[in-house]
Length: 295
Image 1: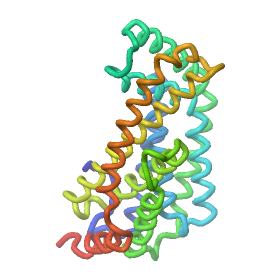
Image 2 (image 1 turned 90 degrees about the horizontal axis):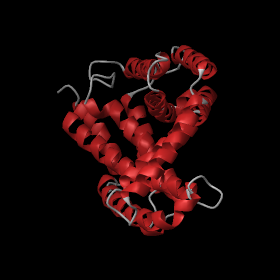
Image 3 (image 1 turned 60 degrees about the vertical axis):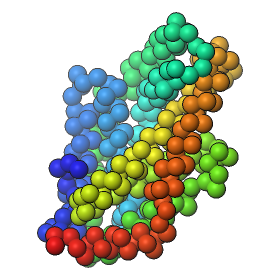
């Protein structure tokens, strides 16, 4: 665990949540503050902090109402506006994931890597420019101001446990009946739910550090497997007719299918462990964490 603000036994729930919100937004601001920082790093970090922010807003959804929905939509739109550069980076990650799979020669892999890297640099030059930095900064200013007005004063740990259970239930319900038959859309939706659940659990993890570290680690491993699968799907789309990597479709396809199957099998094993409890049992676990915190 790290030193980021989180729920603590000796800190009021509303105060802790506000501190968490401020820290997330400050991290997002720091990600884009230095114009000399490599664009790929800045975009990656900003999008990561927006996922944390959206997970918190989803957790507090019924409490924040329309304001929370508006903030979530804006955070989603900002992340999408930076998606071009991220897509190319995801394709590079997928290509690295294919190392040792399929029959592509090192020369072909190098050519592919150079082609995708050109696309990434082009997308970066057109993404995080001066105007975009101003847009992001203004959005963060607005979000930071809204945090101080959130109606959290009556929120209890029991309320928070119910919302965390809701996130757990949503992720559990998104599990496909058969992972091998799930399509890309279903797995993408599952990954979004896992991302939200993983970030939401960071809020209460310090109340039971050993369990929290284990749980977040398992959720992160599941998220990574689903993310790698998603990267491979993106690379597949880039090899379709008319797309920039179409000429490599034939040699890439077998390797992509093999590696995608590996990730699906691993994701199924991780999901079975992580979501073995029914929501009521998960809720009870959270309640015990709250009852014994600081004892």
